[in-house]
Length: 416
Image (cartoon, rainbow, N blue to C red):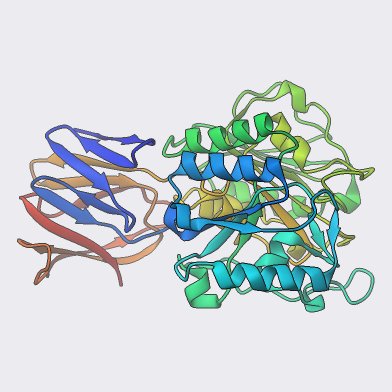
């Protein structure tokens, strides 16, 4: 007997049982309940920020909140004249302070709903929202390093509670039709366990190909986890299973020949991919218009510092453990001050749990448990007391777990 995920109602269904996925997430049955450790951002923890002077921003925000079931109290209004590519730091500080004052305390991340402004002084607007404007997040001279993000490779689920930051992303689109298509792709991706391919493209552009030195290691680490191809060339063409596409060039040809799966992530390492309009280089928006669900680019000259761009291995690792696009992308960039994150924040194609009843217990199938030691406890009542019935160690990239028990009652899996 398998569970199936109903994306519209956030429910898991098991033949013979009704399993409800709560925000914990909690799997609740008429006779059996299992709590799993939370591993991702949820809709009630995300604030959607709209500009009340921008009709497109308002329309995108309202549609997204409704489509994702985001509480009305999480739809936050700011006000500024739309259209400018850059906000002055002082104007931004005033805007951000007002936003902080109206942000509910449980909010852990922001989604903004405009293309411009995408920059604040020397920072991207998504990083400025997360950290506050500070020149320490920018190069103090040509090609300098910047402040390191405490969220880099972060393993928790509450960054504001733990780190006092709210990672941010923009649902970027030049029209409502494009925004709706992006949002719908993200929602369609949830829990699909996509059978796609990660394409790591090693190009002839030496300055922008610096990530290629880690491609072979990434492929090795993803063996039997995500199908990964390392290719040489300047463009990928005629593929119908693109789940990840990482490359390095100023412009990417052949996008019209590709089929991106719902939830796909793609970016190109170059100087101004985050300049969403008016740049001589390709905008990260072109990835979304081609069918990707998330992308990234810098808004000022970063030079080719690896730390200023997404680490493909970390993006793939976090995303494939059931985390959201926002979380996986942010955790992969060590120095994100100059980088703009765009896409559908809550896309989570690998967030799925399957139970199979067996004579000796229950088989749990999921990617949501990361490597480490766990405890399975049991109680006959929801308030306990719980007694440990099993300890088990999760190996890297393990997906199947045979759990003791299976009789009616309440079960809890906890990380040790």
